[in-house]
Amino acid sequence: MNWDRIEGNWKQLKGKVKEQWGKLSDDDFDVIAGRREQLAGKIQERYGLARDEAERQVSDWERRADDRWLS
Image (tube, rainbow, N blue to C red):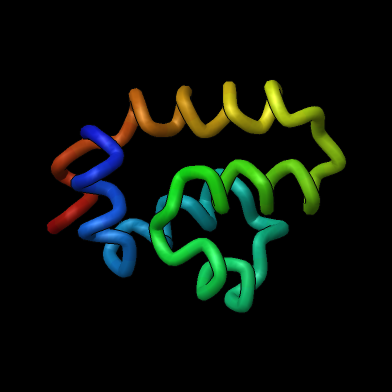
């Protein structure tokens, strides 16, 4: 699933993001609002990761994102 679809369906996909990155708060999700760069930044902040590792995790999650998650 490409990021435009993820951003457009953010409310439906937040649960899947929470499964992957449980340290993110509801306030974080409000700030992220479906924006990839914001997601990577919050992951970096909450998990104490380097930027490239946070980006890698988001890319991996994006590749696994499935249209079935939208039902």
